[in-house]
Length: 485
Ligand code: MCA
Ligand code: AMP
Image (tube, rainbow, N blue to C red):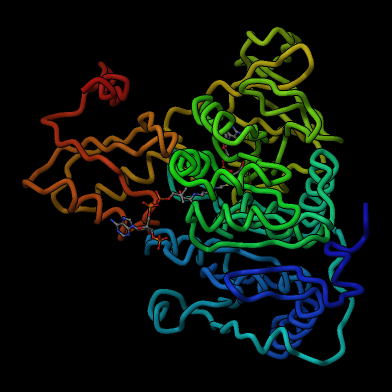
């Protein structure tokens, strides 16, 4: 494994590494930003190794700062700038970052009690000496907050080795090289947009063309220039396939790309088929989790295989297990088991939560994903569901039903709440809430209330007012009955 996390920053030049809107950044500017950030933070009493929160605004400077801080050796806690007060105070207390990079001091005043450091273009124009950049080590690189079925999100700690190992395996699977420009419109506070899209481009040596907002036509235009690779969630492919029906530019961009990759949720076959009919291209899938990065990927040269997320990536072990975690050997595309994985890509654990870590990662290093799959005779996997029905994947974002229920219960007129995911052609699953009210309240008010308490993408898209929640003899809410309410 190459020793520097971002080898190109060791001998930087005028090669374009990042593009956002009409602005672009070279690897030399990234290397200069790395040195400048390290110098400023060290002068403020925070040498490399310290933990920084990063407000991932939709700007070029955010992308620069994420690379620079990682290359300088800091631990990063990338945050959605739209986090609600409940999540923000929880994460800041839990991760205890020393500085908030890129946070607007006015917007966070009274919400967090740490210093903010603005991100300005001057950082990347810093002319001073450049210390060596970060090596591939076993120290924490990222703390990424991810929802569980209940409670507040947990911080998954990923090391530099987890990230470098995973990216190198994906580069081999996809023949991803410095000649490729990755195009994506994903947020930079999750694995997909940050690790694969941003860190992947910088490690592999090509460029990233990043769009802070997803607009099908703009993304398609970017795909039609040079050798391009597209990373997106299924909701984006759904919207592109709709746009392609009427817009030849969208068809042309998709048809031109070298590789179209989907992940974070299952890509519906109808969207795959519609895209193929319109563009002649198939989208390949890969499967991962925040805690393990990417486990399986269809390789660039694999023959088409409906619904497959590919075989395990190089260097990892994968098993299907039954309810007692016993190995299932079948490769019949029918026997269902939970996916367990082991390898250098599996996270170090959840920050401050040894019991939660022990529940998913055993003493031998096996991580139990909660995802259910079957295996084909050639070793490729087909994901068929999830053990936890209280986890919802909406637009590629993971949302715990319990988190939304707790937010609804904070509203003075809500007596009881139950939340579930309903199938949705665009979002994969949409968040649906059933509430019992003490005082009449419009559903929209409750949607807006959740959007003000949590990240807006966690808001229910539907709220149904009912007289009482269906319960079993033990008093537990029976969500299956609500699905038909
Ligand atoms: C809407 N908004 C609101 C409200 N309603 N704000 C306040 N109150 C409200 N009631 C705002 C939102 O903040 C947002 O603002 C805008 O309106 C649109 O929001 P929304 O309707 O939620 O967005 P959408 O159009 O449905 O988004 C679809 C999307 C998005 C673009 C596909 O879901 C997305 O970016 N998904 C990517 C998720 C992802 O990266 N997952 C990777 C996880 P504004 O427009 O200003 O933002 S990593 C992972 O899963 C693993 C490792 C893996 O395998 O990759
Ligand atoms: P997150 O915690 O946000 O990283 O989400 C991880 C989850 O996303 C996994 O446990 C899967 O349930 C789901 N997921 C990711 N990629 C795929 C895929 N290609 N097909 C189906 N589900 C996926």
